[in-house]
Image (cartoon, rainbow, N blue to C red):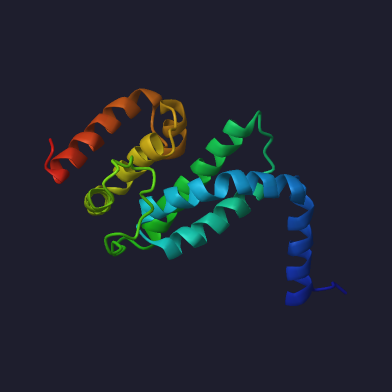
Length: 186
């Protein structure tokens, strides 16, 4: 007579299998997480326009990163992989829920914008930039964020966004031009 697993036994077996596939020890994971979580969350927040969605996608990104069982050449390769996973999750999320409301102005972390020394002017400039970024398409926001907030190379941007390296320069140019037009400076 065949033995059928109960739901509890089945879930327990799946959990044990998942634990067995993780190749990174806790200390290594903590070090990777400490170096990458904040920039990755900022990227997800900027691209999705929603801090709560960014929280969920960040958690799913690290889960998939651990499950991938990939070997990485260096920290940059590991970081690029995380951004690629996050970008794919954003695309999947957008496919499931075609329209997401944009957050209120001032919700984003624009601490990377250079300070001029005039606090009031800097606050206004960041608020204007935040509103303008919300008017861009998600891919345009991702391109600009990766290039200017994260300082990613064209190769890294291409890998994260899923475009050809040769397209990044033109796409960045168009995104900057559109942002300048929205801001009234171009």
